Length: 121
Image (cartoon, rainbow, N blue to C red; front, side):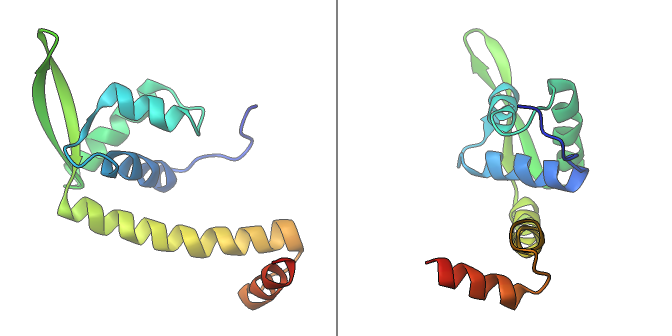
């Protein structure tokens, strides 16, 4: 199924940071690509610039490790990256609640959405 909603740069950054944060020692580019592609239809050529930008912004650190006779580039979330991810998660929580409220319930206020959700439970 093709996603009809555009994925903006901030959302892509948030998803990549979240994927990288799942591995304490970091993870390599191909694996990041596979994880992101499991939820979004994006190409590798889209994701590698995101990784470079996050590295430039000090949200990711990079190191190489030998694997099967070749060097594999690993990405690890930094302290700055954790702070950015926390901000993205907070923003996403508020944003998705508002969007869900209007798309699913025809409501624009958060309170109305919460009340409706509580009734369903």
